Length: 338
Image (tube, rainbow, N blue to C red; front, side, top):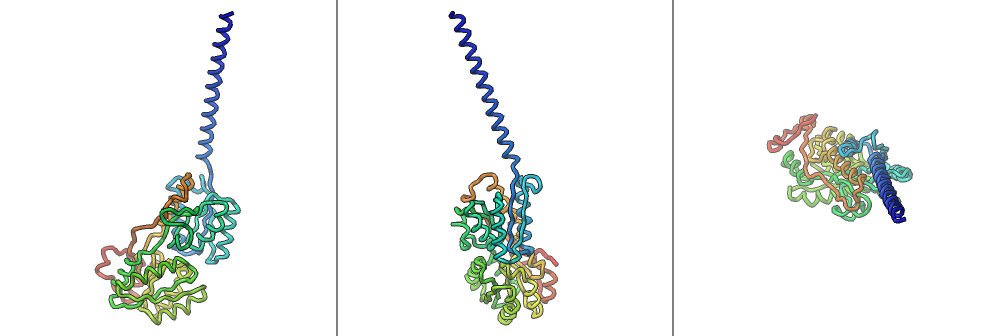
């Protein structure tokens, strides 16, 4: 009887051990399967852009490149749905609403108006919004602070290196007194940039003359008005003005008044020079931030980033047409384009 009981106990122990091993294998297999499922997840990202112009296009290109560098490759594990608002706020609202309705994994919003509409549309469903080319995210009410965004959105700022720009303008135009700035009255980032120019201008013995516009139709008359009162124009990263750059350049060139750009693409399109940022690099930074969000990092704790370095770009054709020469102190750093 004792032997029979002993055999029974041994049998039960073996059975228990076998079940434990089997359960462990099953759990391990399940964990492996889950990990595999996560690693093979496919994401859909909506990209909303307020307008089509080279600066913002470069930002979008860089965004896709930045994500790719972090393992999110178009056609493999990520799909992009890109839409441009063509400069219309109502269209930007429609785009943002459609992205949220499709329950996309993340929205990339390029430029302040698109960022604001995307943030408003996405906040209820808590779809993360990663913005780019927003000069003042705090003023745009997209974040609580640059270090601790805390509102379900973060990204990159394209704030202009104003003092370097003013220093460059002074080198080109040692006798100039007044700098003109055209700006969209409804873009918060433009107001921020103008305030920066007005604060720094006296240091370089400049006066800022500003003229606001509300629509594309305002730009020809506003340009005529400002050209009558300034020695040169400097552009902001203002989407309305930059989208109509050729109108401004045409009128300024006729009067031999230099127009300075806020970044490289504006110089390639006819502005005299710029001490500005690289929008492809800005886009890459934005893409890497988006990758952090997709990998599970809390967007509320990802700080807004800026590009610290700027580069000097000079349009050789514009230089010659205006009868100017490249200042000696800029020759070592200038990148010439035509």
